Image (cartoon, rainbow, N blue to C red; front, side, top):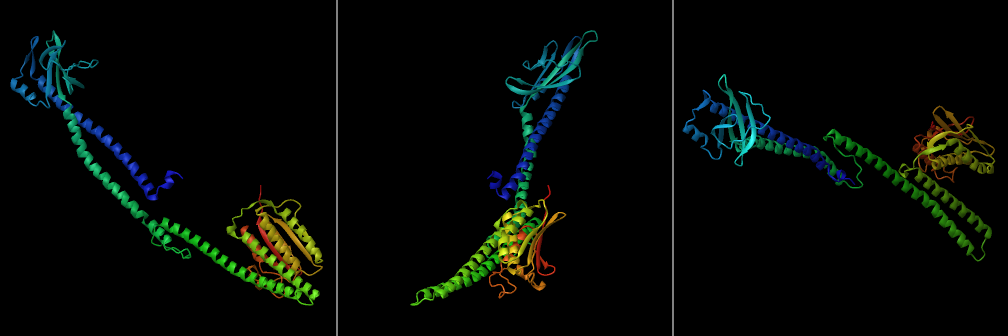
Length: 469
């Protein structure tokens, strides 16, 4: 079983909702950190640029040299805070030091030396990471122009501290918002799954015998659809259980009578054989009745087994078969029984195949029951015909006899289990043949129709879809 199937629905929803949210929050945190670093760098760079221009105003060209108006008090102000010291340097190329910090890092190679332009770069002074701003100014005379370089550097610790403060000011509200969103997601999932929990409790607290519908009218549409499907299943199970109970009760009743009769007849034969002067002729007649009872019981058991195989819960699958071939074989197998009763049994159908989807064993049982009924109820010398006709996309299979037929008012009832139109006339029947036939027809998405046969008798037919290609 996969890991996803082991997780509950609640955990799967939490994972699929909170995990993407966590990824988005992490991406937002990285983006916010990058923005904080950029904003802090911009603030520091602006401060350094202002400092370089202010320092440049204190250095004035004087002939071929420079006059520095940088009082000691101003220097002390710049160097007052050791933790956030400001470094400065004024020089005139080629690297002519005028004042400030001699260890000031040089401008990285490759940067153009243009007057009026400010450049910013990272460097280190005496092991301290600093941010440096460099400003070139035009100096010298018209005949001897030169450039003056003003550099101001400041520790990057202030930039890091400013970045940290920005992240705290942004991160704390974002973290609170993330926690609040997670709680709302948790609460929403809990509330959304509550109808499923109620439905589970309703099912868990039910008795195995309780097949009443589940009430879920106030639940969401998805839960109502699930409850409706469960109710449909419960109704089908209840119908099958009721049908099985009725079948078992009827079968027990039907088997009890022949078995009790068989026991009585066996006792009569035994008492007759144990008499001082047994009447062998009478004992043989009683043995004949025992044989007849055994035959009826065997027939009843076979019919019950056939009915059990025809039930939907038997789980039989439909496969391609030739209905014409099957009908010919079943008719040929029944010819000896018809000849014994001096009846004319024949088959009329197409010369070619009649391909359908069906279960060969069940369809053979269906046709055999119809043919047996026709042989049993038709008089001697009559004709019985099994017909198969192709009509478009359907094949019609019918058995026509010349018996007494079934009154129209009784035709729906004869498909009920253990129902017989005239029990006195048909003492050998058990009332299951047509019930089996109808159940098999339903398994093939069809039904058996009973109609009058001209000029006399009964026609039992069903239509099955033809399989093309």
